[in-house]
Length: 365
Image: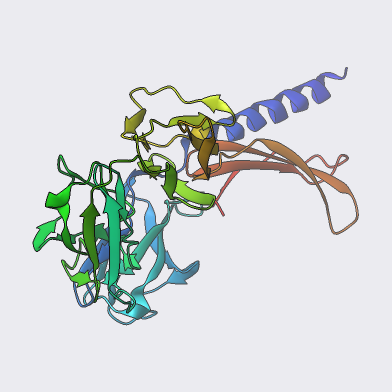
């Protein structure tokens, strides 16, 4: 090989390696990123992002479009700080912080959603009488109304407020109230209620459920009270989850839980709460089909079914794609992750050109 060509190839190789290494080292990074928030209407809302090095230029995006000082009334921008002086519906949406070096690569923060806290009223309904057998398990259905953020149960139980479970009562995350073993002392009026944890506003069901308890010597047939139809549940990864399985009748049955046909063994992350299955923190592997099943004295099997879908961020995958230049020559593009917030991209314009593989940082979609 000609010595001049050898020197040229060595130079090209060194420059390519230097540029590729710089892709992972010479770009800004976030020390902190903006976090989603829910606040009351009219309150002051603030988003922050801290970037290194300090020389990096910081800008903001709102609803996927660049945000400038005069773009959105009531919003003040100051480097890594975004302040909404009085939160209004026009400010609701997704924000993102973007940092870049002069004529250099850029990175984008995670998405931060700004919402206004609110809670809807319960729908009007009639007073419901409920007569049950002494010693059975009782469910008073109280689906939570629409709320941002999600509402928390606050029930009116025989004239007293109740937000947390007690020895007799089980307040479930869905808003439902379960009485484990009902007796005459539980008779009375029950009203569904919920409150917004941000505004503190409480809404109540206009009409409640009047519970009466009767005593029968003979045992009653065992049946599933909730859920009475298959349910599909969507839950964010790392969030808690309770799958309810409420049965009535006597003698009280003990249910077993199955996932995709295999029995679920209770442990630190999957716990039993009476016949309910509690996930302390949902993982991706918890996705699947669940069945709560019990056998009656007559040998019949009764069951309730759930499908659990776990929502979460998808991982960036490495890949190589081929592109075509304007002249029709095929080019080669390489993409690989360089950090949790960004990708590296390199390309060669065509197979015959002598251009170098040039690394860039591109903003995530």
